[in-house]
Image (cartoon, rainbow, N blue to C red; front, top):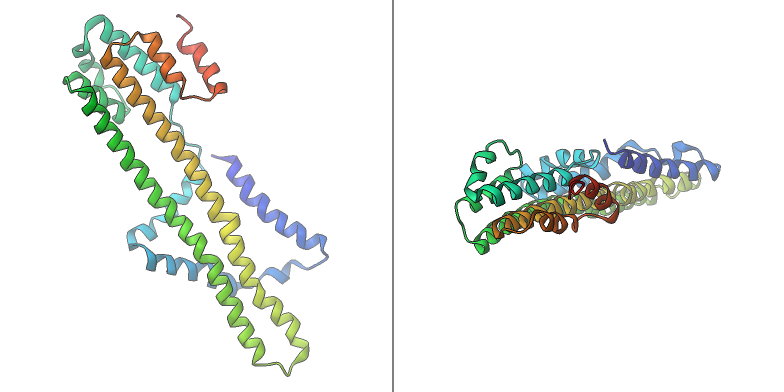
Length: 261
């Protein structure tokens, strides 16, 4: 569970409430169910118009990733590749075949299978990078889906404001109602801005950060697989892979994977 996501969304909403209370205004001033439904459901249905139905319906599962901390097991990747490297240097590349069935990482398994089969290094790199590129493309399409919802929400908020103003202008003879009606008309603009800037934009940023980490982990695998095929020294292999980690993570992992070096 990603506590930062929960803290961020509830903290941001809390600051909106705090600002209203400090200004001495009642919280009821920002509550209007029809306006909220217009912004959220109206923008969502517009999103369904923009994308295939299956993608529009799938956005809810994407949101779930924002509240989870994905584990890409960089330490496990380095450890496994080092073990495969040591075995390959001792017994030859064909000796790796017996170990592949117990490997959970399908991407690494595919790369090492190509190595065992004697595939040329250039072809291995091309195939693995193609798979990585397609993964990034799929993730980018999901990010664009959320971005589109964030772009549509303020527009629906403005639409609600226009509808509210039209209703107000039809009853200008009631002077006392102009202020409250104007306030309620503007609530939809507030909702649209909140949906876009407090939810959708931060969600996309969080998912892109996760995607970058997953891509980095797969790049580690590609580098490691090709290093094993090239017959690099195991310690050199480890140093190559450690370069993908941040200085803090690198120091922690290095103590483990190179402790016997």
